[in-house]
Every structure is written in C-alpha cells, then in structure tokens.
Length: 453
Ligand SMILES: C[S@@+](CC[C@H](N)C(=O)[O-])C[C@H]1O[C@@H](n2cnc3c(N)ncnc32)[C@H](O)[C@@H]1O
Image (cartoon, rainbow, N blue to C red; front, top):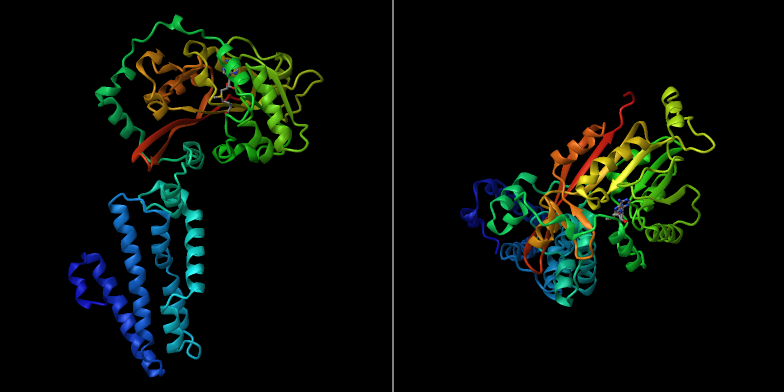
C-alpha cells in the first residue's frame, strides 16, 4: 500500500526519508503525465512496494532467527534483488521506449526478469556471505541451500575466512563469561593432573603424522601473508625457518607468495617432512628455495649450518647480509612459530624459544601465532585432559597450551626478544544449525631480535 499516513508508525529518524521518497514519486507521476505517459508512475511505485515487502520479509526472518529453505529464499529473492525496481527506474528515464505497455510487461515478471534477478541475487550472496556471517544478517542463499539440502559448511572454512586479524569481540568479554561460569571452573584453578600421565616427547606427533599419511589434515594458511606482510616486502635472499612445519600449511603460502625467501623447515617428525615435500611438489611445479630437516627444538639445538657462531659474528660486523659462508647460512631473517609452541611442554618453552633466538640474525623477526586463552577448543577439553595450568593433552597424546598475552610476552622477552606486536585475534563464528555462538581466540605476535646485545 502507498499510504502517506504510514508515517505515524515510523521513528523520527525515518520520517524525513519517508517524506522525500513520497515527494519524489509524486513529482515523478506529474512529470510523466506531462510527457504523455500517464499511468507509468504507478508502476514505479508498485516496484518500490514489492522491493520493500521483500526486505521486510528478510527482516522478519532475521528477527525470528529463522533460516528459510532455498526455495522460499529464492521466491523472495527475486523481489529483494531489486531488479524490478532497477529496470522500472531505467525505463522511467527513457521517454520514447518507456511506454505504458513496457511497464505492464515488466509487472508480469517475465522469465527474463526472474532469471536475471535470481542470478543477481545468488552472485551477490556468494560475494558477500562471508562478510554477512560476521554481522547480524538474514541467512543468505548459501545458508538456505545448506539447510534445505543438509549440507554442513565446515568450521575450518569459516575460520579460514575469519582468521585474519579479526576483532569480532573483545577478549575481556569472553574472559568475563568463562570466569563466571561455574561449569567451566575446572579450567581456571592451578592444580592439575599428574604430569607423569603423559610422555612429554615428540612420539605422539610422530604417530600423528604417520597416521595422517594423506597429509591433508592441516589446511593451507592463506591468510598468513596478510597477517605478516613483511614476508612479502622482504629483500632478496631472505631466509626463513618454519619450526614444526607439519604438512606444509605455513610453508606453502610463503613459497607461493614470496619469491625472495628461501624457506628452511623443520619438524620433530620425519613423516611430516615427507608430507610437506609431497604437498609442495603437488602445488608448485619447481622449487629450489625449500630445504627441510628433522629437529625437536625443545630438546636439541638447531644444526650448526643454520647459524654457527662464527658466521653470526661476521653478520654483526656486516649488516649488508653477506654473511653466507660455504657451510653455514649465517642465520635466518625470520622464524615462524605457527601453532607449534603450544605443542611443546610448557616447562620446555623457554629453552625452545632461546633456540629460535639463537638462529635469528640480529634484527630478525619471530612471527608467532597460536591458541589463545579461553579459545573454544580449550573449553571443550574435559577436566581429566588437563595436564598443567592452561595445558591439555588430546586423546592421541599431543599437547595443547593456551596462551594469554602476559605469558607469551614473558616467554619471548625473557629470551631476549623485543615485543613488536602482540594481541588477541577474536573471531565469532555462528553455528546456524545448532544456533550457537562459537568464540575462537588466537594470539598474534611479532618479536624482534635486537640488533645489538
Ligand atoms: C599444529 S602443527 C602446526 C603445523 C604448521 N606450523 C602449521 O602452520 O599448520 C604442530 C607441528 O609441530 C610439530 N612439533 C611438535 N612439537 C615439536 C618440537 N618439539 N619440535 C619440532 N616440531 C614439533 C608437530 O609435529 C606438528 O607438525
């Protein structure tokens, strides 16, 4: 209904807009009558009403937290795409072509209009659905399709989209919820299980990698170069050591995106190194800037050829980077610790970080990303899985520690690093099927080795 008195029900802020819209259409009708196209303005109004009604339907679904079926969504989407309003508007401006019979034809929703409207609606949703999931918005065609056909989008996919430096909520907000929930109190107190219940060595990871021989378990971390742009802007002949490379989730995007870097990768599991190499060979045709070696950095030193004292000293005298000798690469410009430190027993972390410090060139950067305190995965651990304060053991024997900023800061600065960046990355994902909010927390950090001791 085109009802000027509808203004009564509107909030103050919208009354002016309502007035402008009605005034615009009123003048439009007058103009069209003068042009000998009387009756056409009415179709313009109708197209506007149809669009507004479709928007209202979406608003209703949103307020009722209802995800329509794909068929219901499409039916409404033909109108909410605004194609009728757009086409009607276009013909209003065409004095010769925009005659009454054209508007009458459009108002019958011919197949051409319906199909174009649907294509527009679906393409728009594909482009915007990741963004829509981060704000309060009606389910898009993708959610509706998944509902109707029982398809579940994996959490990982959503995480990947949102992992890049998001701040969907303040970490203190989650802290407040967790620390005031009696059902979660077992995560908070300091006493814990007997540590002898698990073996703090690398065997569980070796078993893990031999079990997951398809190497597909970890996903490529496509967000990494956005998170750490210095990996792209670095100078030629830069060197990077990825510690705990797994199947290459971190190595791959770096090799793809940064031609200047030679990547060295290590893992405590030799199976992991094989998986990494297979994945690189599959994804990138010829690679001569990748080398790997086996090392448990929580119990052993890195091999001498990474940074022997003599070559590091030479580098300190000559900052041009010409420190490479025949045997030693003279240290690395970057160390990446991406979801690896959390796998190391807490009491061994200080030693492991000192190893990282030792192999970096002066001025080099340690790039850190790992699980944050009160991340959803921490709160899902049962009480008997606790093996230390904020430290848990999975059923396969691998460890997971959850960092707060203070702990991360202390570990790295005690080893001699300077803090460059350190913050929580907080992503809220919504499980629409279960109607539950899921709070993910990661710690993002950059630490620099000083140029001078
Ligand atoms: C969660 S995965 C992370 C893999 C990779 N960095 C990534 O970005 O996905 C942890 C990896 O660290 C390795 N790891 C665990 N403890 C280690 C240690 N003490 N020394 C070297 N590697 C270790 C494991 O084998 C595993 O491949």
